[in-house]
Image (cartoon, rainbow over all chains, first blue to last red; front, side, top):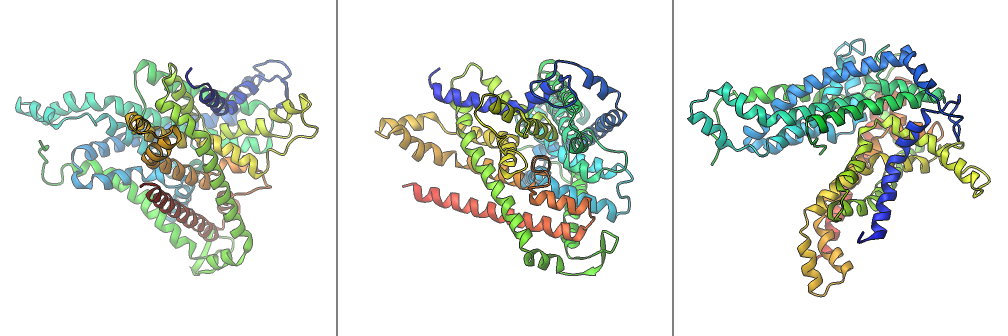
Length: 260
Length: 288
């Protein structure tokens, strides 16, 4: 190594970044009733408790359902917007970009408050999931947009013209030229949208109704009153679910997800 | 060669759903917050009939809330400064270092973003609590007699916030440094500039946009953070975002909560504008 001090410093920062995550995973195998150090032996008992806990199981189902619905909606809307942005926006390009990234740039807590008032103002309140899903679509939309428009960066309009000059109709051109180009971006953006939606807190917290808590909210509520390692087991399962999504996308589909 | 642009409304159909979504679920609701902040407090309802500026006069009359805004800004400022100091060398190595494990290092920087914020804050409560890992280790080694107060105070909040937002500082700075041609630095060195001078006069001004972006991002995110301050700060230290959410969710004071949220946003935005002005001015002076 050329610069040992810098390397060591960076390793310390990486350790700092990983520490709380590793600690949670480690704590989930604690056999004791409380989070004690050193752990009182290794055990999977808290995983068993978790899998038999109806409240957490329902929260996981709600989280997966909301994330799936939000991903599909923001996937479609975000992809269409990215196509417009790259091909047709013209002098409105910068405006479209800023507008599409707005949910990412605005404080999530403010967006959540705004939506809370809004669903009550139009009279549906939090009795339906409309508010929560709308919120999740809003905050995941930028990620689909970023990924799809990044995959279109290499798009050369002359390819489209060449295909047209060879007699391809609009549908064929879309299917044979555009679709293969944007496919990695759409899938990558959708996977990222799913992860963001699955993990988001503030939007869900403000817009949850009775019995529609997502996993992060249920975990947060649990942590305010309980100190058993069950919360660590819940967290570890949630981390593993996310990791599976990432590894599948990177290894199986060979994608690089654009975060910014 | 310019693409043949179809005339008419055809392509607009592509952007229409996004425009409607953003208009209905973002623009209108945001305007509604402003209206809500001028409404009368309700009796048993979230808000009453009629309008008032009372929510704002209450904010300025009561020193407690001004203090809390100042405290929140301070925590945000501290978090941003520490993120910058901690993150810059890492961004530098990611951008410039000849590393065999660059992909792994990049993955390590990104990995916290893939873990939910509740889980990360929970991890810090395990580490920082009075009976937490850090205090237990230090007592076990005989270095301290009493547990250090690491949680339920501003220190704990800042430590956890630095962890949560560090990737948002590292990534834009890394992109900024990658945009600076290393040969510019070599040119300065060959003209007799010391390594430090070359860095200060050539590299730093050129990657300032990345640093600015990272700082603004981290600052704004820390101001509006809710989960971390409420889990680490507990009931003892409250940031403004926590007070706002409690006012809305627990006590249903919608107009009051809106006014607080807007005052925090306005002061935060002012800080960002001042920061942008100052940094730009400074670099102008620094350059010959």
